Image: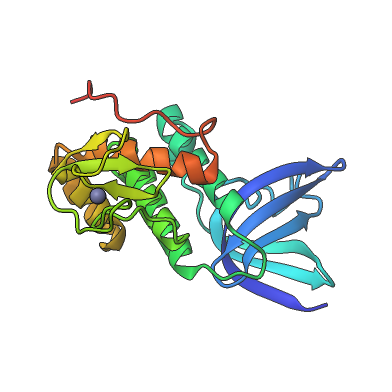
Length: 244
Ligand SMILES: [Zn+2]
């Protein structure tokens, strides 16, 4: 049987028969891998910690035709702090659901993989509000899915947009103030954040913490994510503005 070794992140698990589980692993080079972890529910199984969502590490699998079985895992991070913090956990669970919906078998996504691990490190170890980390994750996720809203051109008349505008998630971007539209208004600051954030190195999102427009930009982007990814039920609350 061919042996496959790949870095990975566990997105999901489901019980299967008495002692086994099915796990969904996100591999940067192979995309989505659904594998059976035999015996992992026995207390002494070496796989007992490897089959939990958020576990990242080096996974060794056997491939038999279309099926994979998980044999070993060298865990590099379990993002343990997340699991005891309901607020942060809710954000992380939402990301895993987005990935579970988007990642396809045999479809490499190395940049999305790296971005996810960086975002998880911020969520688990960082001090920034989880709403801000989720916003940055969504912005990069949407770009890598080819779904970033267009911010520099009016989606109705095609003219360049500069300054305040409107935001129309159905059209997928900005609408200038000269065009007639019922779409909500958007400040120039929020528009510029939505234009630049997805194209900026991931860790730079920390600088946004000092920008008063980021909650507005996050709310506008969320309307886009909901429309394209249908995650309304699982999306965590947006920044409520009351926290310090
Ligand atoms: Zn226009």
